[in-house]
Image 1 (cartoon, rainbow, N blue to C red):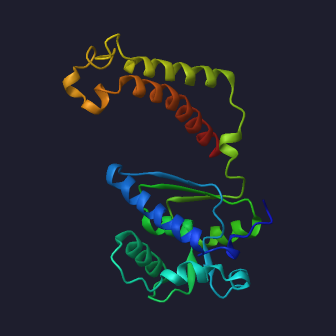
Image 2: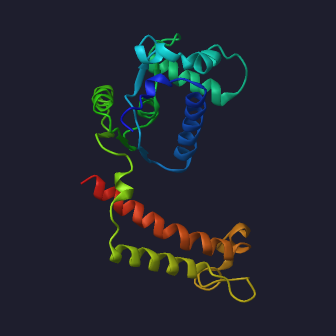
Length: 226
């Protein structure tokens, strides 16, 4: 939707909540993974000046970040979020509101791969300028859902479904629900937690469903970068 300008809404209640969650999600993922891949399908321009025409028109930020800027309580997620915003601004007083691309670029390290999609030409140019010093980021001037909308060929669909069935069968329980091909036969049950051994049927279903989707998403995303 080319008529949409995130500047009208930057820093409002929804934006604040989204960014607090985004920061915590990133921190949690980095505890488990050395690197992550991040895709922003509707990136916007990256930064939003409080004095700009867009933000001044509705002043939605007055009911979002302005309400929280002087937060003095003990919620660590909120305190860290405010610290991130101030560090990006290089000031305790915010002169602009950083969007998701700026926040993720600040938080991430060079091992992470960030992909930002923005269809609006002016927003794209501003975003590319704002992220020009980021070596782990790629900015695309196109629809963020392009890589999932590409036609999936029948061979890929067949192979992905077959892979899902094979991996699902590895966890599919025996008649007594105490073991499966993988758990208790190929690998001793002692190597698995009770969470897995007690939920083989559920895990089999989840694996057989998720594997095909992951294969298709990875294949489509790689094609979109070519």
